[in-house]
Length: 423
Image (spheres, rainbow, N blue to C red):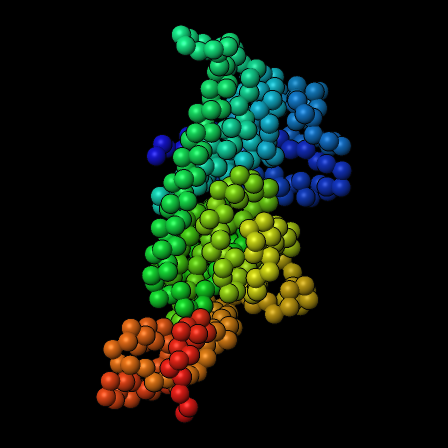
């Protein structure tokens, strides 16, 4: 598999561009630029200046207006920027015109996110998904206006005028995309087969979802005692991580960490990571983790809901977990509870509220079990399966059979129906 092409380089100084559309407040556009700055910091780029223009619509050719575009080079020189980054996804034409007007390389929000994803993908499946998204982005940004893309390619045995360099590039990328999709499909199938072989399929699955950098990985570590690497940056968790979550009662479930969401998350990434995110839609309950100290918590939760809808998880049961209460909270608890009834307030860092959260999670697990009296042949594979997945309260071994009283996962109940006996 070819390595994903890096879009940006380290130690860059960027000028951020943004358009403030009608209806957008100064605060909203500033928050969006601050988030762009965080993305750039994660990609080892410093945003040293900003240029914002109020417009009714985006210029098809220039992104900003013609006059404002001419100001970019001067603004970049003033702050010492050697890179221009737009807070939206640019078209190939917009990138070309801004580069020609400024003499500086131009990136957009999507290319920065792709770069961060490329850095943090560690599994084969994760790398495939990043490369798929990167190639989809490249395909959309091929342009035919440059000299090296406009030459015709002909030759002996080739009918017609030949094939342009642009057409060749498109064909090569489309072939790579087809091959990548086939590899990714096989990788997903292999993962599904492995999952079906594991006994965990009978246990309750919780998925941690939320805005990037909300503290999901820290919470995973706190709840399960695992040691998933924690970094201060956006999209530091890319490949899904699942850990066993044990309770004092003997019950247990599976807690899965997922990639963080963000506003303006590129649709190519959502499509590329759909296979990974399908585990979210299959979970019994989504733990929607939110940074309670973030003044934009409501907007960020809205962005999370938008992505959940796109991946088919809109109908899943949710438990809202407001994290980082060891910091000053952005709103009073009563205000948050009025908007998100039943929300839990915790600090994954200090452990405050974790016991209450575990109690709520166990209440969910209890719903997934049913108590049965069973008489099963002692040599049956079901005995081993029951011992591994159920909470066995009593067992009596007889001649060729074993009598069990057990709390059994509801998912296993149908297979045990022929062995149910009266107490």
